[in-house]
Length: 107
Image (tube, rainbow, N blue to C red; front, side, top):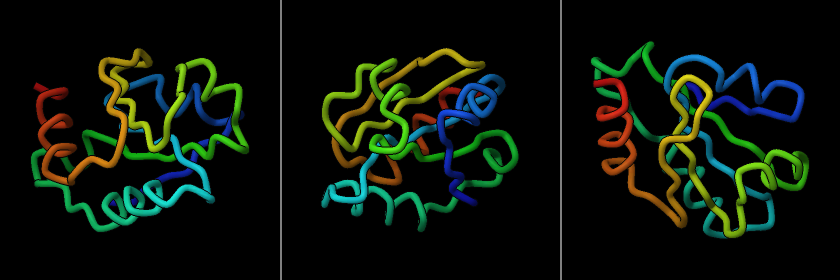
């Protein structure tokens, strides 16, 4: 699985279709680094491969997007389905939790 990086120019198109998990983070945030490492090492089960995407938004480089989704604490992970946010998780999340949420979202 490849973690993509979204910015203000690419964000809307990136989340418009399908299931996309977005990690709102910042370079100066310690817990964000922990969450990033979890995402980088996360292995999707075969039933999710090609059906979900995972991306990151640096809130310092894309403050408008962070404000649009009311990101007040980081890391914040937002699960999108066909362009609409369906779940928001604040704080570091384990890979098992994220995989569970992604699995539920494609059902």
